[in-house]
Image (cartoon, rainbow, N blue to C red):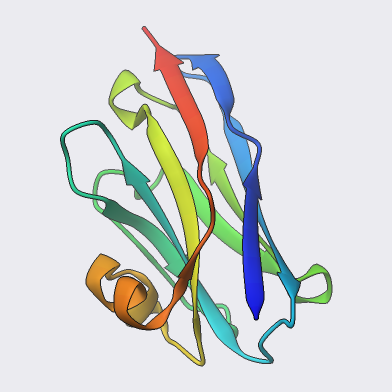
Amino acid sequence: QMQLAESGGGSVQAGGSLRLSCEAGGTVYSRYCIGWFRRTPGKEREGVAAIDKDGDTTYSTSVKGRFTVSQDNAKNASYLQMNNLKPEDTALYYCAAIRGGNTYECFSESVVSSFGIWGQGTQVTVSS
């Protein structure tokens, strides 16, 4: 079974940057997509970005141009570079994976919950 572990969360002032990491461990799938999600209290978990093994990416409109998702296949790791952070980016951030999935599937919370796996989450707090 493959597992995911996020790291890199923390507190930053508005306008600052953070880079989140998501490392795959255990029995790592040969092909999988990675999705990044976030959840704030009282809200549903929302897709932020996704990437597949071919490097195709997708972003939510709220983060496009500020966040960049990437991957290092040799390290079985994905990264979410977050620039120009805003207070509304404050959330618990999760990475998720679907075996053999594409960016559309890894961007969907319902598809990931049905067919994929989740990391434990890492908190990002942006102060004004």
